[in-house]
Amino acid sequence: MENKRETKEYVTTGGNKIVYKTYLTAGEHKQIEAEFLKSAKINFVGEKVVIDNVSPLVQGEKENKMVEMLTVSINENKENILQNMLDLPYEEWNEILKIYQDIGGKKKQ
Image 1: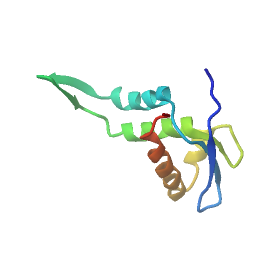
Image 2: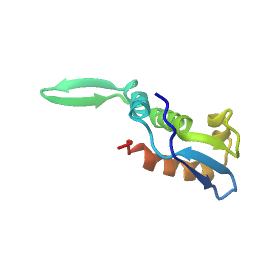
Image 3: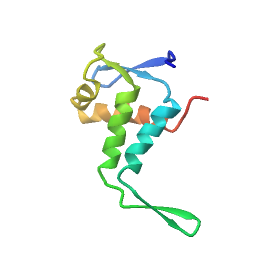
Image 4: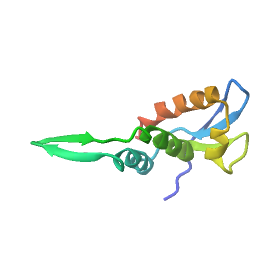
């Protein structure tokens, strides 16, 4: 089922126009969380779940996955989204990532 999602535009301080989706689907959220869990070692201590050995590279992988899933276009280009975003100045990357991290905690209601 493909649903048409609301999008918004954001222009970075460097003048790059980003069009992005306003929410993650439950399936996309699960895929992003899978990036975290695939490197973790999960143990059970009594009734508690303990997560160990999380790779420090996981945060970057989660960010990349979020960029791929939320970005519709950068400067009206819909191709090579992740690479084009990675080619932005670091400050602009962080501007966009802040928006995406705010979205990443929400699911469509």
